[in-house]
Image (cartoon, rainbow over all chains, first blue to last red; front, side):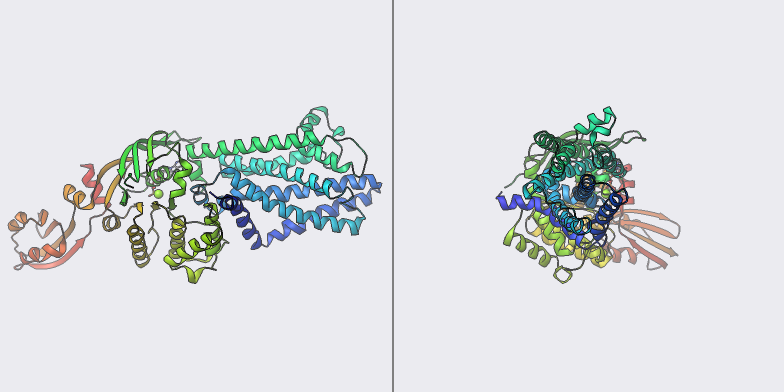
Length: 261
Length: 309
Ligand SMILES: Nc1ncnc2c1ncn2[C@@H]1O[C@H](COP(=O)(O)OP(=O)(O)OP(=O)(O)O)[C@@H](O)[C@H]1O
Ligand SMILES: [Mg+2]
C-alpha cells in the first residue's frame, strides 16, 4: 500500500470527527463556551483573591492545560463513541484498519481543535488579564501542547478500552480519569501540597512535568522534561497495546457485536 | 482462482455474560462455499445467522474450529482477508450526520483509497445503487430503503471478492425488497461470491444457489433449493374447501403432487408447482361445489416441522 493510502486510513477518523463536529451546534460549546467559562472564572478568581502575577500565571496555565486536555481527549474517545452511538461499529471493524489508525487519526483532529482553543484563550487572556501565554516562545508552547495532547490521547484510549472491556456504560468510569488528573497533577496548586501518597501518583503522570516546564517561563523553578516525555511515550505505547488487546478480546467475547446493537 | 469462498471446519461459538450462564450459539459448523456462489443462511430468530456471518467476516472470532476465507487462514491473514471482503449489516447504520457521499468517502478512506481512485470508487457505487440523487442527504434523513442501498454501496466500495449480506431485505416493503434482490443478483453477476442470511424462505429460494438451514446453531440441512424441496417434500400447499363428491384417488398417483391429505369437505395437497398441477386438481372437483381455494408458499414453519420429524 502506498503511503497516501496508509495516511488516509489515519485521516478517515479525523474526517469523520470533523464532519460530525461541523454539524453539531454543541461543538461551539466545546470550543468556546466551556473554555471561556474556565478561563474567566479562574481569571476573575485571581482578581478577587488579589494574588500577585506569579499566582495569576500559575492558575491560568493550569486552567488552559485542563481545558485543552478535555477538548482533545474527547476527540480521541469520540472515534469509538460516535460509532457506538450510531451503531456502526461493525462497519469500522470490518475494514482493514488497526487501532493506531483510529486513535492517531482522531488525535489529529483533537490537536487541531485543542490548538484552536489555545489560540483563542491566549488572545482573550492577554486582553482581559494582561497575561501572555506565549512568553516562553513558540518552541516551549509547542512542547507543552504536545505533552497535553499525548496525555489526552492516553485518556481517550482509556475510555475506548473501558467501553470495549466493560460495555457501553463504562465510559463514565474512564472520564473520571481526567478528574484524577485534575486532582493530582498540579493543575491549580503545586504538587508538593499533596499528601505524600498522591505526590507519588502525581510523579507518574506526565502532565505534571509538562506543567512544571511551561510554568518555568513565568516562575523560575526546576523541571524534568525528559522524564515527562519518556512517561508520555511509555503511556502512549502501553495504551495502544492495551487497546489492541481489548479489541481482540472484544472480538473473542462478542462484545464488539453487542456494542452495535 | 478457484479457491473456495469459505471453508469452515468445526466452528463453535458461545457467549458468556456476567449474569447468565454461557450460551452456546454455534455448534460444530462445517461447510464449504464455492467461489461465485450465492449461499443462503436460513433460520429463525436467534438461530445464529448473524453470529456465523460475523465469524466468516472476521468481525468476531470462533471459540474453536478452522476457517479459511478465500483460501486465506482466518487467524494468520486477517488483514489480507478484510481487504477483499465486505459486509452489509442487518439494520444498516452509519454516522447519522454524514451525508451519503461523506459516509462513502469516509469508508473508502478506511480501506486506504485516495485521490482520483477514491473519488471514482465513490462515484461508481453511487451510480450502481442509484444514490447520486441523494448524495447530499444525511444518513438520518434517508428512508429505510435508501439506508439499505447505502449499506450495499458501502459494501461494494473496495470491490470485494466475497460479500456478506445480513438480512438485506428485512424491513423493506415488497417493492424495495425486490429491487434489492435484483441488486444482489447484479452484484453476483460480476463474479462476486455472496453469503446472505434471511428468515424468508422464498427469498432464499429465488436468490441462492445453495441454502444451509440453521437451527439452534446447527446446520440441519444444506443443499440446493430444488433438492431441499424435493428431499423434504416441501412444495406449495393447495387447500380446497368443498361440498359434494370428489374423487381424489387419481391425484394420489399424480407425479406433480407430493402429498394428499383429505377429510370430509377439505383437501390439502402439497404440490411441486401449483401453476402446473392446479388445473388437474380442480378438475377432480367438477361435481362438487368449491367454497374456497388457497395456495400457500411453503414457509419456514413447514421447513422446520419437516426437519424436526
Ligand atoms: N454479542 C452477543 N453476546 C451475547 N449473546 C449474543 C450476542 N449476539 C447474539 N447473542 C445470542 O446468540 C443467539 C444467536 O444470535 P444471532 O444474532 O446470531 O441469531 P440470528 O440468527 O442472526 O437471529 P436474528 O434472526 O434475530 O437476527 C441469540 O440467542 C442471541 O441472543
Ligand atoms: Mg441476525
